[in-house]
Image 1 (cartoon, rainbow, N blue to C red):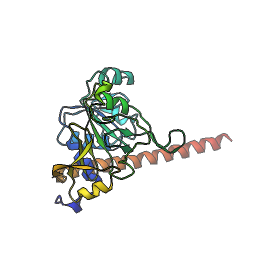
Image 2: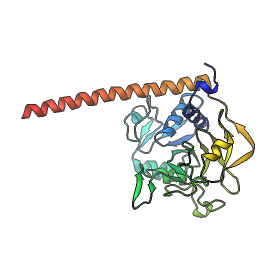
Image 3: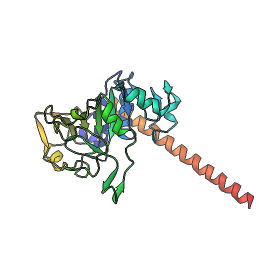
Length: 279
C-alpha cells in the first residue's frame, strides 16, 4: 500500500499524527477514546517504553484491545501495577510526576481551554457530555498536555459553553497566575492539521496541515480568526507500518466487542430462562 491520500482516512491521519507526539519512555496519563487509541499506537510503534497510566489505577497498561472506559479490566490485565485511584492523583499526577497528559474534548477555544461537560447552558443543557473525570487535574498538573479532537465549527468555538479544563485561560501569562504545576497544552491535533500555542499570546496557531487539507478548510472550521505559522508545514502521511498496526488494533477491538456482545446476549437468555423457570 502506498501512503497517498486515498489509502487512509482523515481519522487515521489524526490518530497517527497524535501518536507521533508521544515520545518513548514518557510517563503518559491517558484519556479514553482517541487519546487511548493514539497512545497505544505509539506504544506499539515508535514508543515501546512509554508508560501508560489510566485514571482507574493501572500503571504501565498494555491492553491488547482498546478499553471501553477507564474501568475496563483489559487495562489491569497486563499492567505493571494497579494502585488506588487516590494514589494516581495525589502521588503521580498532582506532584508533577506525569510527563504527558493525553486528552480529548468536545469543545476547545483559542487558548486551548476545553469543555467536556455540557453543550448549552449548565442549568438547561442541550447535550450532557461525559463530564470532567480527571481532565481538570491532568490539564493542571501534567508537564505537558496533548489534545486530540475533530476540527469542526461546533468543536472549535469562540466561547466555550462550559470551561471544564484550563489550557491557557485568557492567554498571555494568565495561566501562570493560577500557579498550576503543569506546563499546559503543547499541541492540538485535529483531522485537518496540527495547532500549537503562540509562545507569547498562547493563542492556538495552525502549524501544519495534513495532506489534502488546506489553511482555508481549517479557518472555515474554526470559530475564531485562526492564525497560521509563517512557515506552514505539511504533516507526513501515515507510513505503511503505522496504518498496519492501527488497523490491526482496531480490528482486534471490534472482534472483542462482538464476542462480548455474544456473551451478553447469552447471559441475558440464560437469565430470562431462569426467571421463566421460577414462575
